[in-house]
Image (cartoon, rainbow, N blue to C red):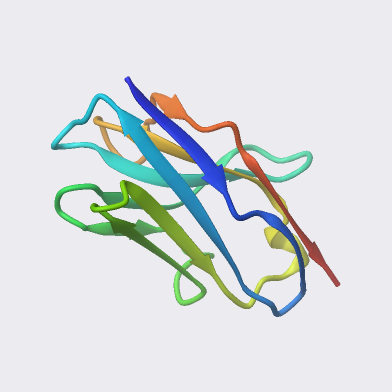
Length: 119
């Protein structure tokens, strides 16, 4: 079982930037990926981005391409998501999650971190 803990959320003005961090611990898998998901008020949870822990291969939702960047630091066991050009539609609870079965299927989740974007 992988444990994940997010940090770095908060309030940002529209057009601003924010970096989320996800600390990863527990049982390690050489073939797992860590993703960022989000759930906005009244909407379904959606994938934002994901990264293969060993390969470094990345996957982005269309809305995240060119604005968000996912990365990982193996020495710190941390996955980051740099978010730029934020708009009110990006406001949501952001979760990091781990999967061994693909970018659309996650089995371990962090507690979530609120991101609020003021217009």
